[in-house]
Amino acid sequence: MSLMFFDSLVRFSAIAILLMVATLAIRDAKEIKSSRYLIGLGVTLTATLISYTLEPMRLSEPLYILARFIDIPNIIFVWFFSLSLFNDEFEIKRKYWSIAGLYVGLVALLRFGQFNIIPQHPYALLVIIDLVALLIVIHLIMITLAGRRDDLLEARRRSRFYFVITLAFTILIYALSDVLLVTPYAEIVPTIKAIIVLPSVLWTAYWLLKLSPDALTFETQSETIEPQLSEREEELAEKLNAAMQDEKAYLQSGLTIEHLATQIGSTEHALRALINGQLGYRHFSSYLNSMRIAHVKQDFLNPKKSDISILTIALDAGFNSISPFNRAFKKIEGITPSQFRHELKGRD
Image (tube, rainbow, N blue to C red; front, top):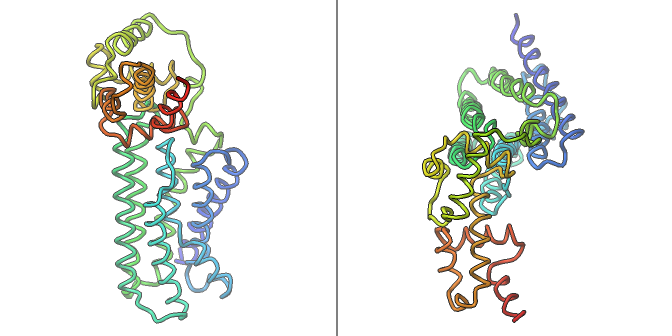
């Protein structure tokens, strides 16, 4: 089998699957945040596959240059897609834009050099680009795995480790293959990249092929339809209610689902299923914060605590510092704690 035939087989299979997944995402799940990044990833990765090819298969010069610039942010879309997939509250913050801008700028600079628009410094730029890509991968691994403990969706919890490790390995090998560009094996780098991409594309297509919006939120029929509680589940629900409502376990700073499960004599799995399936929370922190914010609001309404600072009230309610408290309060109430308290005083 010739290299060109093998390359074409791998490359165009990956392109066809990418376009199919992107089309289904646009049709069936365009309102879901993670699907938007998936569409962007499909477009940029397709641009890479159709432009970064063996010499005899190369596009005409204008189309080649256009595709090579379209493919620049593909790793950024991988990053954003993964973060949004595993974090319901993911927003592209300034630090994300900064890193994304740095990466895109560096790769654009590399492209300008490749097209002789500016003097070329390929090796130095490649090293820096690979270092930035490495930082992105490390961040992705840390954030996604750190959220595993807080996640109440069992399917998503199971997927975190395997998804992130596989994706991170693919990105790293893909980036490191650029080292071959300064060796006698440079001509086979496009084929290597296509081979690296194909397994991930196949896995993504297998996972999302149906493509229902539920696939991107990890919901299943059993999670969206509330079943009748068994006797054991009713007993667990009573224990949870006693711990949280009567004993006010949520006031414990640093309370985790592991600690709570131990306190009420439950397994983590059963407790996660109960809080998610019956109470509708997707993250333990969201459940905990709802209890704590309700407690804080009662303190704000208490005339005896009108002179107590917001920070003290927040710490007494189990929050570790003022910043996460402010974020949680505004997310639930739509205004800051200071505004909420000010409005209460205005009613007096």
